[in-house]
Every structure is written in structure tokens, then in C-alpha cells.
Length: 638
Image (cartoon, rainbow, N blue to C red; front, top):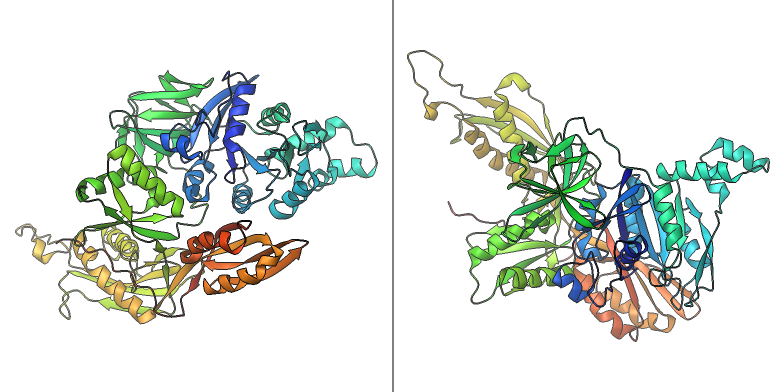
């Protein structure tokens, strides 16, 4: 029996959770299909998920198809919870991307497909809701090829789309796509001798290499196309690999709290075997934790085990310091972030009877489960800010604090989460025991602009042996920490910081002298002198503030575009293309993230309630109009 760790991904409302229910029912895990609207699904277990009818947290459930055990991970579809999807992608062997046969390819669908292809995750596409009015076959297939990827292989056709009688008729097409990657198949295709076996072997090999993506059509409600999809999952996607005898290596993709407040980590084990009572290094600090209990997912239930081998997903107890994204055992090569960071920020305002300290602890617990919440705490102002992907996430945080912690909170109006980038080169230096430098350390730093998206790089122009390595490490760590707040208070990115000068007062080594801290350099000296040197270098370089911009697409009745376009301009949106097809018009362009919520609110009134908006983060753009946004850096009590 082999394992497959499978992700179900989609734009919100494409029917992803309903498909999960139908799969579980079809393989005999559940006797009755749950309903998203009724709040009775297997994977949406949070009360808030059931009430709102959306997936907020990823969930794992297991089922068997003949000799294949599938660990299925249902992920959120709403773009506000893309961070939850990001963590899951790194533990998958394959994926099913769900597209609605009615709405077709949507903004989040494109974001997900680009990421799946970049990570080379083998992916099947399932076009759901073929039984709904307005469902299409040719139209959606063209949209998948045009807007997602041309490397698709239709696995059949649809009879009577848009009716309850809609059925999926299997049959592999698009030989030419497979032939693009297979010379033998191309020769057979040209010579007219393409056989079923040759075609099937090519399809399996190329799907597992993420070169092509089979496309199935069906309905999670009626069950049409589900048997064919299950067969595709079993035969076309690759099995989990990993040596159970190798060194332990795993990744934590989810952390939750148990009934007693204990941390429970969801982890994929890539190598080795992790057992109860084993001690395992965790996270960047490599803090050792001891596993006290293990559960694996099997046959739709959780089963306690003494150990979990490579390839499996498990729940682990006992790792008190664990955080989402931590490595277990030997770290694997990091992929970095798959999606754009949050583009909004808001201040949490405690209710009249809410203790600010207790609220901060509760928010810290939420940040353990979702690191991209990005807490910023200002002790002097007694304010805590959180990062956001959108307004729905704000509502969810508010409801979670009320239901799980009993805290009544509101939020200030969301503001854009900008970044700073150097616009020139600047350098500064402070020398040990000169010009009033209170620290026993010499540090010189130069700041240079770097390519967009490159983050922060740290280099040295001084010899590594010029002073103890711990002092270099103190400078590098402090550089990254200091760049969290630039000249305008925003995180500084896309720059290279080079250490140009170094020096220290060595520890007195004569036998008759005792160590005198006041005369010898310590790491604290380098952590103390680095911030003012770096800030001075930034001042000389100069920085620009860049605000997040979203790419948007609005579809609306063509006769409403005349009112819509001036409204977009008033919101500082930049329409780039306008198109009219019959009675429907569309506008594409960019809009500041800060104005996106206002656009969402105004759209129904401007389009008689018929306008549809898609948006996704696109880029950062320098602020050149009005006052440059300034964010006070958090102050801390001395």
C-alpha cells in the first residue's frame, strides 16, 4: 500500500469542501454527505466555519482507494486565508484544483495554478457544478487553457451540461499536448499508430512530472464524474516517498491548541521515523522537544500510534515551543513564501472590560497558528496591530477572540501595509573608542538597492577572522531586526547591506588580570552600535515608500461602464483595458490595496447589483502623491 498526501484547492465557492464530502462518501468513509450550508461537513469543524459556510483552517482526513491511502487536506478558498494554503503546499505529493463550471476561472484559481506549476506539484483539474444552470464545457475548457495553463489533457466530455442530468463521458483527448514532451508518442502520432497503452503511459509519466494537467468534469452534488476523478487520483498522482530508515526530517504546517491548551502540531514526515519519547530539534533555534503522543490519519479517523514513518502526516503532542513552518530534525531546503504577504494592517481596539495584557497573549496564540498575522505591539501606546489579507479575515479574528477567549474587540480602519526600498547608496561607520561611541565596537555598513523581490541580503567586505564570529552574527541579526522599521516606519526590503568595517576590544588574556567587561567587547556592544550606523546609512541612501497594488477585473452590464469608470478613477484605480461583449463589459487594471474595500462596497450600487470583482495582489508602487505614509515605530519601555 502506498501513500498520497493530496491537497484540494480552489477559489471560494467553487465547491471544494462539497467535493471533499462526495469523495469521502464515494469511498465509504461517511454514510451521509454533509452540507456546507447546513454546517455538517467533515472538514469544516470550527463553529465559525460552519456558521459562515467557508473553510478557514486546513483540515486533514484520510481514505483508501484499493491499495492507495490518501491523506486529503482541505484548504481555504477565500483569498483572505491564503496563508493557510501556503503552509499546506510544502507537504503535498499532488493536488486537485477545483474550478466552477459556471463562474469558470477566477482570480484565486490563477494564483493557485501559477504556484502549483512553480513548485511542480502534480495537479488534476476538476471542473465542478456541471449540473448548475449556466455551466459550460467548451467555454470553461478554453478558459482553463487560456487563463491557467495550455498544458491540459481533457479526460472526457460532458452530456447535457447545465441540467440535473449532466453526465461526464470519459475519453482522453489532446494527444498533441502529450506528444510535446514525448518523442516516441510524437512519432506514433505522426505515423498514426497511437495505442491506448502508449497514451496511458505518457499521461501517467507526464502528470507525475507536472508537465501536463488532466481535466475532469463533474458534480459534487450529483456524483457525476467522481468515479473517474477517484481513478485519476489513484493512478495519475505520485506516491509519497522518503526513507523511513533515514535521518528524521519533517515540516509543521499547522498548529492548534488542544482541550487543555496544549499545542498540537500537524507535520509531514519526509525522512526517518519519529516515535513517542523521541527528542527532536525544532525550528530555526533548533530547540529540542520531546514527542509525548502521535496520531495518524487512517480510514477517516485519527489513530494513535507509537511512531510515524516517512511519507505520513501526523499530529504530534509535547512540542511546547513549536511554531507553524518549523522544521523537525534535519531542515529541508526552504521554498520561501509562495504568495504575496498581507497588504493591510489594523489596530486591535479592546472593549471596555478587556484586559490589554490578556488580549495580547491571546493574539500571540493566534499568531502561533498563523505567523502572517504579524503582530506589532507598542508598549507605550498599549496598542497591538495585526496584518491582514482582507476584511473577512478581520471579522474572523474578531469572532475567534470572542468565542475562544471571551474578548470583545473592535478594529480601527484598515490601512495599507507599505514597504520601504533604498533609492540610492549610503554608508556610515562608528569606530571603537572614538567620537563618543559608547560601545566597544567598530561597525561600518553600506546599503545598496537590490532587485525587486530579492529581500534583504547581508555581505562582508571584512575578513571573517578579523574578530570572533559571534560578533559578526550579532551584527547580521541586528541588521535584519533594524530593517523592520525604516526611515518612514515601514519594513525595508530589496536591499543589500554590506559590512565595511569591524573592530573590537579583545578580552584581556594576561594571567594576572581578571576579565573586565567594561574594557572588553561583548555581543551587546555590536547589537547596540549596529542600529544607529544602519539608520545613518539609510538616511544617506534615502528610501522610498511603496504601497501595495492589486490587479482587478470587473465584469458588469455594458451600459454601467460609463458610471463605473469615473468611480474607479476617484478610487485611484488605473483602468488599463476595457472590453464589451454583447451586453457584458469588463474593466481590468490596478487599484491601491487601501481602496479595494471601498470598491467592493460601491460596486453593487454602480452596476445594479450585477457587477463581479476579482482581485489579487500584483506589486508595490512608489507613493509619489500627497503625504508619504508614515508609521511610528513601536516604542518599548526601557
